[in-house]
Image (cartoon, rainbow, N blue to C red; front, side, top):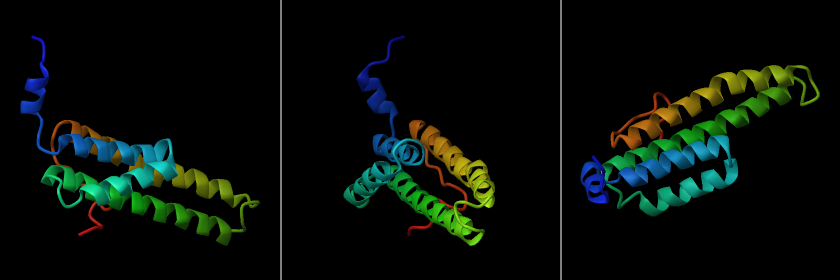
Length: 134
């Protein structure tokens, strides 16, 4: 049975498109374009945070919160590299590999789960990093 645009509109939750955009920008920030992806996510957040339906508002809040956590963890990894002898030290690769295999990968997996929930029109809260903002 073919699906018409009217059927899709009836099936989608209010704010689902905005939730999908927020989760997509979060993943773009982590995987493709870190600076522009984060700026686009912040622009969307500040533009839509008050008028967005609850589903979109929840996804917007959690993606911005998780992006801030990701930035903080990246700064922490760089500080640890400097504390262990700088970027010429052998410890640099230990910290980089540990960071990417634990923190970064976890944040990406949470983003994929959030995008899947947004595509389904459901709310989702990232564990630990998804509730920083009020």
